[in-house]
Length: 87
Image (spheres, rainbow, N blue to C red):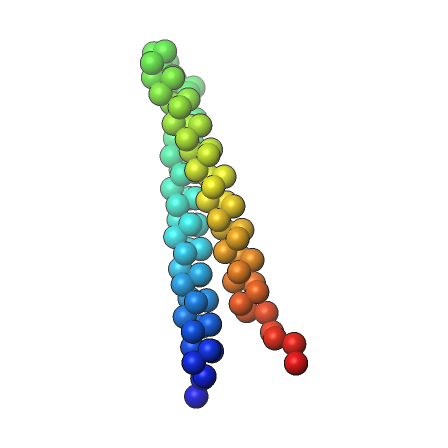
């Protein structure tokens, strides 16, 4: 049977993978919104609409950068958790 440490490591790995999956979904959602807003920029918009889209695109870019950093951190943690332990 697995030892307590192995069960804890396995549970932690699953939690890391779940978090990474949620981040991946968040990235996809933001990218979809970003593409939709960018498509709207090619249409006729009023100055306030342009300003609002510009603000939202800036927010999306910031959030994408934050999520990408978090994804990389989780990816590194998952890699370390699944790397064989040297004997």
